[in-house]
Image (cartoon, rainbow, N blue to C red; front, side, top):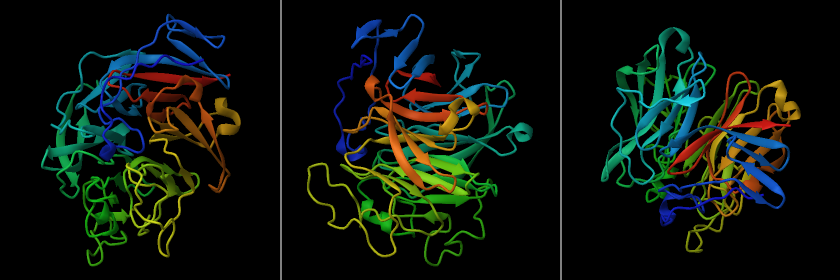
Length: 398
């Protein structure tokens, strides 16, 4: 069965993607249909896929949904890249967006990106948001924190706690956030495409992952905390455009995946001070097929634990939890957008130490582009589509 997909007439801008991510998004529509003997029942808002997986629609009509987080009371917050935080409550998308949020550069791949809750959110109601700040000719990835009202309608006491290095391009922002077990915050940043060589320079934040304290100050144990050999907030560097980030507390690992150019998407284990190679080493090539470098490995540069050639345009990432998922518990689920081998989810099979034992494609028969993947605190799996008029689905397994 194929899920009927109508791609809007947006041109693919190679400078902003990994072998197929459409910077403008895509539009998607579906009706009841029968393909290859299977049926999509849109009246019930469910879609059956191969492998015993079912997608049930939770909400639609979102403007390029980018990230999902869950509040203690059960509400889901969703960022729209156009510059809004929306609330899904009791299975319904509230009409009014959260007020008090910052202005953003909603251009190219810019806009609102990831959110994360403070580790003490239950008592302090503090929410963190990454977004594109600035103008067409002077912008960067920034992070604010603010206090979310009890009814999740308003963000107040908004304070900027981090701002990356300025660029004059509206592509490759990174924008994922996650807290480490010690209470410090990780922030991913892209290299702005045209600044790719600066990803090898830890003195700036192009193509870096930063680590800060929740108030924006620099942890004393950062690898370049003194500023002598690198910018104080840099945690790792040599990245292209990190679009997935996950702190795996059980294994004490940090996972991140990034878009390669044409080919060469990567899943990495992130360790402080390490250089992940871009653009000195890569498994990809330029969008016109010309060679970036002949090197795929070099001393002092990390190798990916998984690489995708051709590209899948990876997006979002979740760690599987909950007894309902059986032997998938502890594995990673990675979203894939519009790369040549995208429009699916990928399960990364991990052993107890974090060694990759294999990968499995999921939902590829539906030909849907996924922007985000999230596990709820009670072990339910949700995905957001990578569409101009996006939707949220819950995935269940027979």
